[in-house]
Image (cartoon, rainbow, N blue to C red; front, side, top):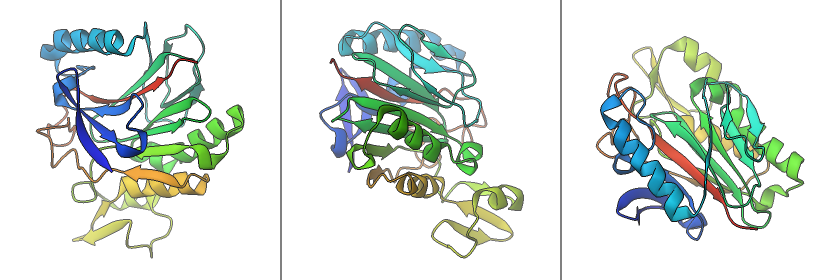
Length: 245
């Protein structure tokens, strides 16, 4: 179950499945990446310092996201990954961070193995199965049993607001008979990106999944929404800290 929590005065979103770990999603109160909102650059910089100070980490591992299926395993002291939409790490006392403003944020974490991943799944990444590919890479490269992985699917644009034409619908929905995945209305399609990603994770063998109901477009007072704010927006983030060894 998801719930709002406080990170040293900043509102964050956590799951009861990982309540004792620094794995969470930020909100507008805790902006870490200003993106198009240059007026938030100073606040984002200060918040990054706060994140590092309070988690006891020195650097943040992050990436330039391009809506790809590129998955990188984090290397010690290599903090930036170009053209990458998922990061996997087992480096003790390190933080991974990816950014979102309607796309689906996914956190994978295995407390038993102390290995985590963060995934950026826009509609293109979802269509190309980035959640499945990341989960399988995490399982295979670190010899993890899928039953020991917890998955958190965070706030993103919901089926209520993700309106598409047939071309996007056709790329995303292979089983057109499965009406749990979409609603068709006036030749438009409203697609459940979160549920599509949940199904991918289940196909990878992960069963312990918490899926957030919050729609970033409906709740743009709490989260950033690229669609609602017509592109002029900052980003909320998915944070994964790998605990000390």
